[in-house]
Image 1 (cartoon, rainbow, N blue to C red):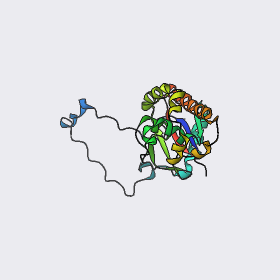
Image 2: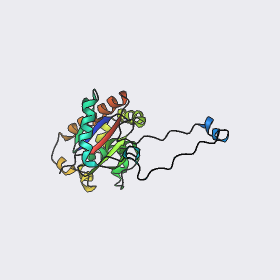
Image 3: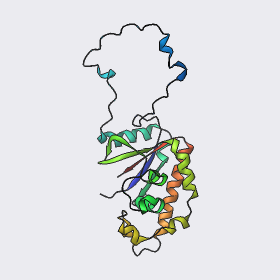
Image 4: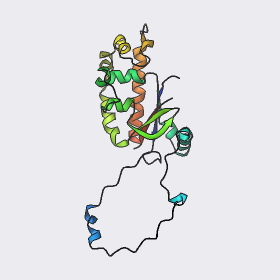
Length: 210
């Protein structure tokens, strides 16, 4: 199976996206000292009823169906997606110094998170691969960096032999192709346009391979 990267805009409130913990209200932090003793609570019934149990992360096999339902039910969401195909690791190499250095791991630099994805959604798989989420709070920084990239900056690191030595995915397909850099730049421009659109709609991004 080819490892092709796809990106989809999703609302940050989607049930599959972990929600940040609310900050404590400092004004009422010590209010319990003056409060009356609360009434005794009934002894919990065991096992608890289904509706009182914690929400369980949906099985990974349902992810595709759930995502499709979300896209169908949310106006405009079907247009906010991006397909990089097999150029994702090539762009990762061209944009991320960490990748060019051959360092292991996903890294935390903006380029790695924009190309390979943000934080892994724990317990969720799609076609056996992990799903990653980049929240809207990061997109302003991501878009800023993407807007600074010029073709000559990508071309500076465009060394097919070096990419092959580092095992950059699909880099061997670049051998002997003179016009391939234009295609890579076009893929980058699609990704940048996508991120700008998502940021404008105040949504987040999931990244996954298919």
